[in-house]
Length: 130
Image 1: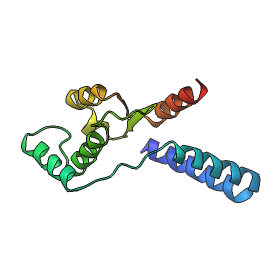
Image 2: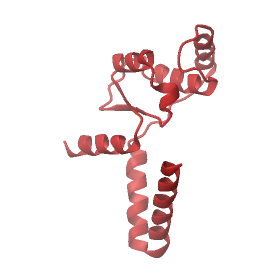
Image 3: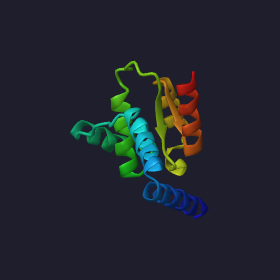
């Protein structure tokens, strides 16, 4: 609950900055656009859904259907080992995604796994600065 409250507080502060100051509003919008430009949307299709189903039959993590769909989408996206500077898999759902099988499989594909948003921001800032 504490994290949810902190997130709400940050959201409210950003909202006030956005409302009260045109200069700050532009900074917030620019920052959001810069972050968005670093992100890639991963697709989902019937084949991914089928592989998620097979994962459930094999009793492999993650164990929730929605989580399996997400995970199989990530695996599909990275199957060709595309050349990217950095691929980060971030989720606050540590209970469902922090399994040795998942960490090992993602590491084999060069994917960094994070369960804390602060660590993700720090990693991206380190990448940008280097």
